[in-house]
Length: 427
Image 1 (tube, rainbow, N blue to C red):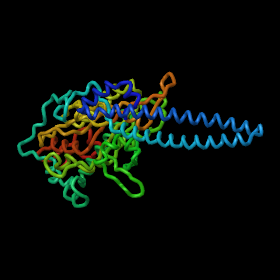
Image 2: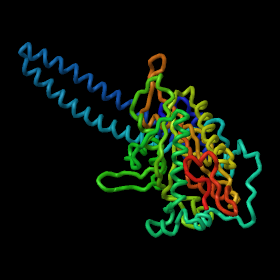
Image 3: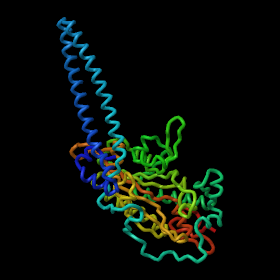
Image 4: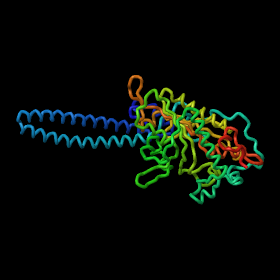
């Protein structure tokens, strides 16, 4: 969430950023509404402060009058104080409503894109900044897509998952389950080696936590909701609970950078139910993912983003998967991101690129919502920068591994993964 001070001080920058996100002139009017409401809030607070100061002043006079035995005069002033308190209560209620209206408006404004973000309308306008320059896997003419490989070796059962729950909830079996667990352990071990502390968070969060990272109100329609007792959301990513570990805290400068990682199941309602784009593991309602999160000093966040990208790139190299890196355009950028890089792996049997990771810098957008701050060298409280990335999401990684490493007599396991699987081939 942008701060009102940032909007006031950088109004033209914010306007240009929102235009880059394809905001119309009519939609840009929200910025003036925010400024007007903030003016009302300040004016209301000034009036309230004046009334409270008057109460304090008169209360002192009442005490003195009682000491002097002037009870009648004191009682008259007490009536005046009661009247002022009534006025103050009305002002306070109005101020609370103005503050609520202001916060609700601020929640509708996305983050300002970084200057590196290319202008565009959709994923077709994303910028490829690095592409696989080795030979692509050369599969035989009878190579199978992963959903046929999983059926051939009985390692993932999509029909059983649909029977037990519904489409988008596969059942992993035998070496399929072991491969899944091996990838999770591999990703966590690599994150730990890179200095990330492992966190085991809840997989349900409340509305405050979801709002803190920007999932609410932006992604409410894509999350599963538990309505019993209190409204809880099944997490679409570990980013929600992990980033909120430091919500409301003032972080000491010496603690930077804070690096956390977590494996969780993830749940998303937007998965489709038909077509090649959503077939097999391409898009699921429930999937496993290892997330990396960093909380850092604002001066270091883009250097941190580069390091996180190198970490993800290193994982893909060790898995021997062709990959490319895209800088997302303004039209494909998430609501809360300032700059995002997507990693895609090439699925040789499907002959298409599959997104497996997004690495993003949110700058102060999340930390403002979560009131996550630090004190600078002058003792002034400032907002931290937050970043996160998938390292990695498993379904499409599994799909690419099965398709790219298939042979006539089975699927070879990459060398880096064999100590985790306990086997070197699925056959």
